[in-house]
Image 1 (cartoon, rainbow, N blue to C red):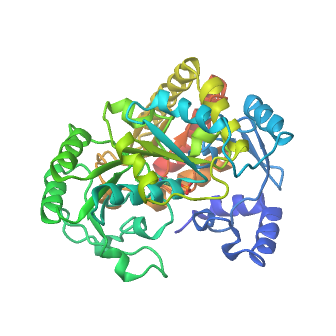
Image 2 (cartoon, rainbow, N blue to C red):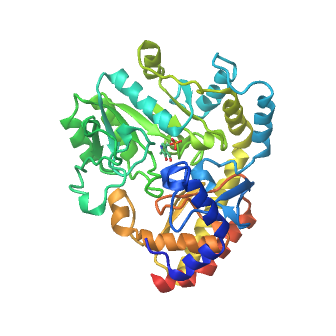
Image 3 (spheres, rainbow, N blue to C red):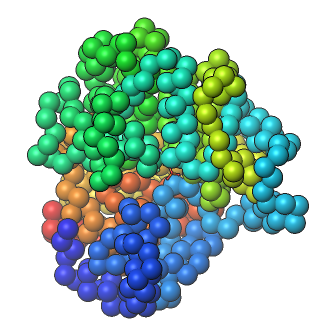
Length: 447
Ligand SMILES: Cc1ncc(COP(=O)(O)O)c(C=O)c1O
């Protein structure tokens, strides 16, 4: 990935301490990061602290943050209500491996938001949520295979690390995407338990379901493919999948780790009016605390009482459940959604105006608090469109140019979207747009 010389040297010049710290961390931690996605060239900036809508690095640079911990922070950093609830819990016990009232209290808050959810179990991450939901779906249907969508990400366990970032030369047939294992160390045999389908092509999905109808027990989708920008379902795609799952006896799982509580109070299920069998959640339900959950129809979830395993020492610990109940009850209120959704509209309109004025080809995909600019006029309907039409090198340069202006527009990768938090205000949206306006001529020249 080539970073334009002026951008790279400016970044390196103002992050010498980050470079030093990063080298020291690398002596002790592979790739110098806690999750491999977080390593990038020339070196990531090293965070000193965060508060509100700002992130500060060890070099003294401050960024207006629209990355928000890869979308885990719709409440913004250090939200006073969430911090107060968690601080109170510190003195009352941080881990109980016996049941406690907060389990029901937090579960009830999630059930209020998701109509299809009758019962809930808590986990510690999105990965754990999808891993368990898939197991339970298999147990319920008695069929072992998982069907997933090309380009979708569902966490770091073996069954889902398949065909997430298939390189251009290996894409194969669009209606029958190949199964590509994403990591060394995942047995080839795992690919035999998974089938891969394209997004937004109901006929192709049906073909695969028909061919493997005695084997596929679970379908997992990101109802908006948030690991391929903000790629929405078109037409009746999600409802079509619902009907196909009913027809072929498949448990329908919405992975709402990224969409949950952010695109609507009840996530994409509410936004599109669809009833999946199971929903997985994490990220913004915890207001920057490490928690996940999965829930769904009673009949499916009761398989946990009947042989399908869900275990974990830290599951449902009171510390994170205090965060969950506070976020859902007190912070992400109707007014907060009105506020954030309004800011989202303003940011999108501003981006479109700046691009039009500067003569940059591009458009914004967005749903309420979530959005991404694509520097192409081509519509992105699935992973292949993204691979074909998005110039990730150009996008990365936009990202570094924005950093130079003190704005972190989204996580580092070109496939990732911005998150507008409840602590962002109009002035922050204007600051973001002012930064984009400043860098637009340089982008226009290079496009
Ligand atoms: C849609 C989706 N599912 C699952 C995960 C995994 O969540 P976690 O990183 O908490 O394990 C992610 C992470 O980005 C995600 O985007």
